[in-house]
Image 1 (spheres, one colour):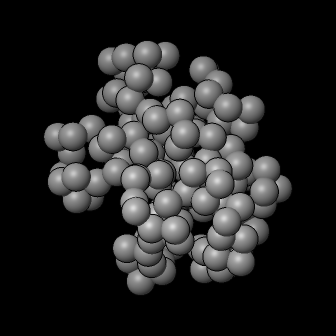
Image 2 (cartoon, one colour):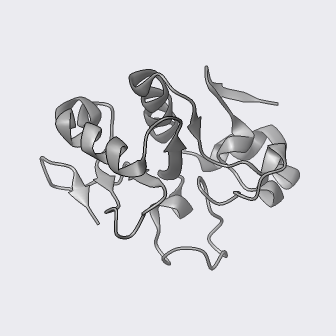
Length: 141
């Protein structure tokens, strides 16, 4: 399985149909800054970060890159540009993760984070993306 960062493998960020078709070349669909941000989460929280689980028998397959033709998410979702991931972090609730991010907002922004989904939209996961914004704070959607 192709490693894309010290704590992550490629299959954690792409759905099975993309991996089946492109294999290691699936990396083409991922913005490297998004992978760097996921790795930063892993080291900052010092806990496992779960994105997709399909590769180990789980049912999550669209929490990283989403092909443009999928009906999951918004038409122009950052997932469809390889610039977003949804995750859970072991030992932390999604609200705790968001609170910690806002307590250290500049640190996370320096690592590329620009946007989070609110807890109302993402009650059981943390959506993070690196879209370009003109804000000097983390945008909440």
